[in-house]
Length: 267
Image (tube, rainbow, N blue to C red; front, side):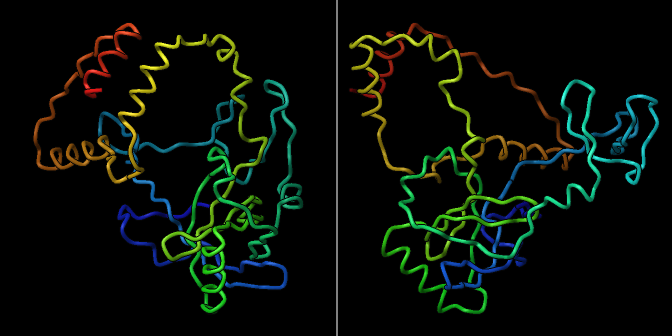
């Protein structure tokens, strides 16, 4: 579920990336889907040092080192090193899920009951023609404090999804399947964890209490992106760029670090 994205986070694209209906039993609510998440990361091209021109990539056969045209390619699944099951285009198309342009909600749950690790990507659902049905569903979901859960097919993948109210709009968030999320207990390192002392726990909880506050994402800024914007502006003006090496912080023993942090907090 990708789409071209504008660098301006204050405005939505004028083009929906999908349109269809939310279905709940026999009820249909026409909606349009807009991208909600803006990827503001900088994209770089790889250039040739000698002339500053962009490089292009070609499909080169690993056996004869010849460039291969798209029409002479197929997809393969590697079962062992350098051993593949080859698929024809029509074989893959035969099993590809077809979208019926529906977001099928089959139950309503508490949004807080979903472990955050399952959240994938969020989209804005806007009303499409039938604004009364959209308004009714949004109001009912908000009043009950629930989220609709179900499935939808977008392009070549079926997604588990939840639909909920946020700032006067319905939001759709795709979820990861259960087998896509790793179990931390499978990592051997966790078996080596030692139980902290009571004194360490007391100091750590005092730090947590001293730093407790409300969620406000606007307090955090992408410092790398801001520096990158400044760097681009400097380069455009022909200015010199001076590399600065950050000073390494001293690594302190755990109890000392805890106690010094408590002092800084004034607790």
